[in-house]
Length: 388
Image (tube, rainbow, N blue to C red; front, side, top):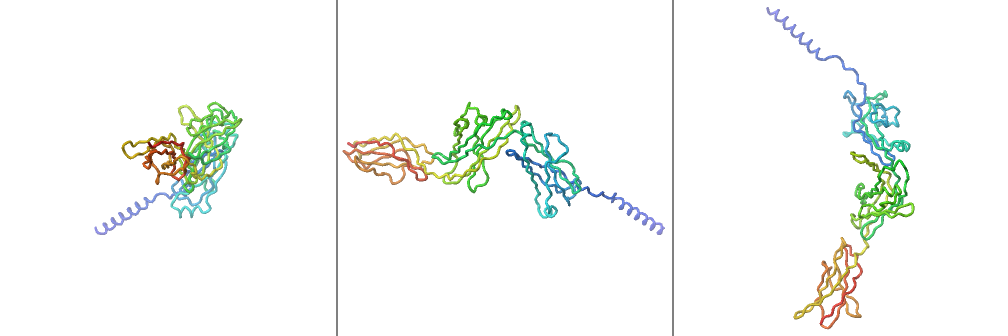
């Protein structure tokens, strides 16, 4: 009976061993090393140029780490449902040290490609789209298919307006430009904006500060030649228009760079407008140095008072409207004498009381305005008053 039990135990152990071997399953086939297609392809258009960016795949379709990477084909089509690359318009080689970079860098690796849209394509399909995709190959020139699609509108763009300048004035920086009408039937249904960007020296990227309607300027129409923007104007001159925009949002005593671009806008009923920026004007730089005095005070009046008490003369005038006004200076003189400033510190309100007056004398007064940088206006028209 003990021997029988021993045989039984051996048999059970053998069955357990066979069961363990069965759990291994059939051998796994080797990986085809097909890179997983990118899913974050982006396309950005500026003028005729398109910039494509995407993440270089790090995994294969069977979730293995990519050891060897082939080239990437760049695909462009007019068909939004494109499924095959056909004839690539370009290719991007893999990084020479791809395997080492992938191991050493915790961040994803990115790639880029720059395409130039053919003018013929834009002219023939002004309301269409160029559809891009990329096809990442392995070293055997095989792929798992196309990436996600990214499209850009084919709406034609205009060359940058000429004569782009920036000059400091009393109220800010005046930006001016010229444009020559561009007759083109393909652009007849397109609206145009002139978009202005500004950057403070040493202060990062450009920011948009204004958009001026440039449709009539670009198409040559003289109807409605004054844009709606309150600080812009357009003046037709023969076959050109001189337009301007006053930048009043700057800080004085700082250096700024400006650039402009013509934006093509195509509107469709029930859909968001499509906008494409053209190429930029040359950058212009200006130092916003404030050497401009405030406006001269007006409506100065002098009134005597003091019957039965110490005599004095009150002065009042219309307040200056300058945003950077710091205060006023008050001047007085008698007939034939030089004017003398009465205040030791700036007068903060448009009023002043002169208590240093004497009976039997006539005084002549004037007022000037001073801004925050010490620029002083001319003196107002004089007002006179006699002390009985």
